[in-house]
Image 1 (cartoon, helix red, strand yellow):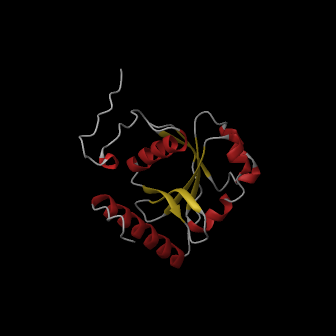
Image 2 (cartoon, rainbow, N blue to C red):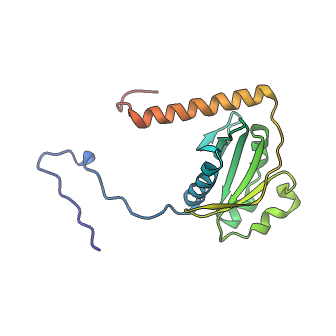
Image 3 (cartoon, rainbow, N blue to C red):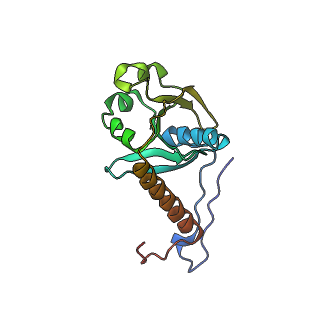
Length: 175
């Protein structure tokens, strides 16, 4: 199939002409995130991606389950990234359950070593279409004040993203 690019009408602003987007599922970490989000959605866990934490870290996926528990997923799609990640332990203070999210091509046995706290952390293997929990995460309840703070931050982020999707601000507006 050949792709035809439409020529803008004379005088049209080329920045406003939509470009053709590639078709098909996302790749890499985006594919893993999509599969996990689908699994979680079926289980009443609602997640947001790329969530900044108060400690300066950024959770790949962070969400809330039907009981109000906070879940964080750290996604890895390469062996080097997984083995070289020394910051993931800083996420544990911001969630009740922590999961590793791996692509199917990555050896899941890598997160079985003591350095990855397998008694505490869960493991999910996912592609762009679905995911499977290989090892459930242990629940480590957050303190009530921390839960309230994390829930409020996550709710504000979700509402801000929804509002900006529904009504994008003009380029000169700072939000």
